[in-house]
Length: 296
Image: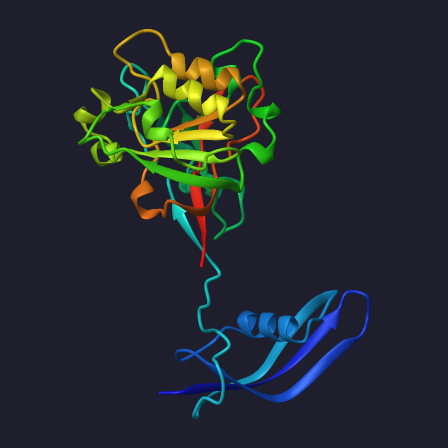
């Protein structure tokens, strides 16, 4: 049934003064609407600035025919796609490296001794290597004098124009220069979708995984890409001890994101990619919350 809300409001400004309204009626979706949603709507609709305290008074939900578009109807201008694996206690990302230990430093029960009754906090403790979960590599990971995470600008990790290049592992695990041609890749985050993330956290994930060839890395470098990501165990082949793709890309200041997932949910292009790590000094790789923002 159509619902409307009737209410009064008072809005006070941080630089003095106020504006008030009585017996406002607006169409809504669902059975109710929060005071905050109403206040946010009034502030935005009236284009008010310097807003401080807001009050919604005498709110009443009415059953009446809608006269216009409900104010809380969802209108998504963008959609976020999570491209990161979940990190949990005991997760093995790379065989031979220790799994993370995630536990309480201060449990809620133990915190009771420090705070007033009914006030509890949890402070977590994490012990892990930096190559855990979905992570980003910067030049310091490979080169002693390369930029570390504290020296990488946000413009290199956030809101990058992205493109997905699909090379299914069922067809080949070796991604060559030929797979990368005929795509618009300059100044973009190039995400290689192989589908290997379907084996995540299984024994199969660690062996015979998809990878880029050295020639592919050189091609990406010469084309001036900003970042290269892959939904595989490593962007290099791990069958040999050399790591030519890391060497080529990181040597040119091109960041690498490994262990991505959900690339199948993305369009070929028309999205922004972000993989922002903490600002650590002396660290060359660290987990990220990789994501894509799609515009509708």
